[in-house]
Image 1 (cartoon, rainbow, N blue to C red):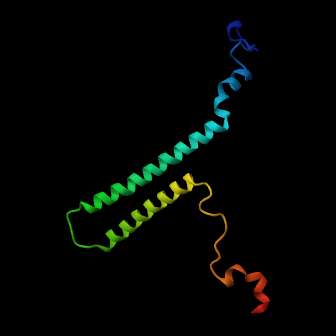
Image 2: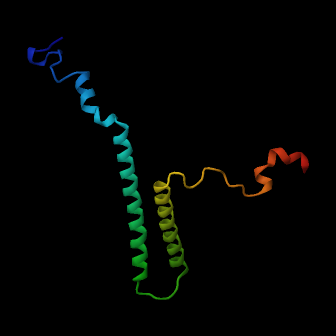
Image 3: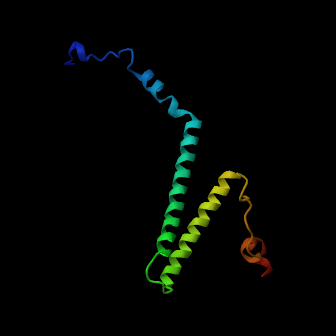
Length: 119
């Protein structure tokens, strides 16, 4: 409506939907997203691992040398965090691990509907 010739609505050679598609073409590739996701996951795992190791190092350098239950709790938590990161790394390196089959814990919980009449 009130447009000057310099601000007309006609698209130029680098405007319009084709320019947007051309600029976003590298982002739509599945390889880009897969690589970015793997790098982000690896960075997050490295950060978690460094946090756990730094926490254990600081706890080992404390001045008070008396045993403490809370300190043991934190050490167990950091050891569990390190174990989780190592299991995640193993799962990334070997795609078939851990197996996808469910673990049957006992007879009663895994076969409840079929064996209810036997009770």
